[in-house]
Length: 138
Image (tube, rainbow, N blue to C red; front, side, top):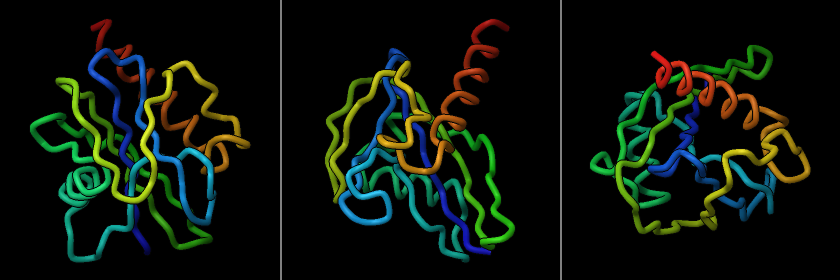
């Protein structure tokens, strides 16, 4: 099975989420989450940190990533590991390939004319928001 990761990063105030604007297909010109293919021999969490630092310059010192969920596409032989983190301070983003932008947490992430992933970004972010609210209310 091909494995990929996506990483959802919230700013320290939890009111914005980091998006990259795709410069190539698929989804060229649309917002997407940071992420990449996971090589078979590599650990998912370490790959998520590596990819996050490569694409944004955000490091382990800036956030703690939590492994949140998997999305599996059996027909496509593909699995996506979803991680999220909240920044512990303001950071200077360094773009690797795709333009990076902070987007308001209340934006419509299900808007498939703006966001890649056929609605998955909306689902992922909403589920993480529910989890964060549950943790906050405990």
